[in-house]
Length: 163
Image 1 (tube, rainbow, N blue to C red):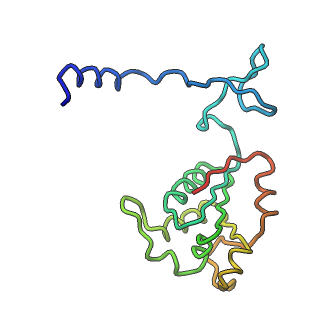
Image 2: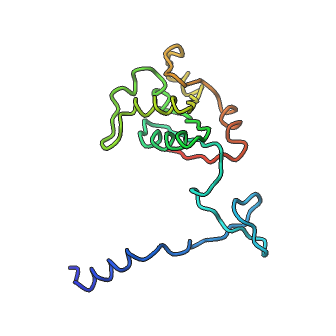
């Protein structure tokens, strides 16, 4: 049972500002952040990263992945969604029509708005071929490609999020 004092303390703890990160420094070649005199780097949060490109990878029908991809594309970043395994089915017209996660726009609308914002959809070619899907039935903005295309996109250090 929670006591009144416990609730007051919990409320006080919640109202406090976030503490400094537990691991505020990283040391590795190419670290992102401000160099320090001792050779370490002050780490920057992902919100502060100045990346111009973002990659979102998904292997299922994740609505949240396209919400994140829309945010990146909407902020003017070159954004690529990589579909692999079962997610390659999303590249087929009509497949995403009935997928709707409570609290979110329908997946079809999220995919369309992503492409309209300049986003690109790369579909894993081996995964696509294994499922014997129809290449002439791709959704707008989708292209079949292998690992080399994904590596090319990521080669400049673009951040990647996987679902």
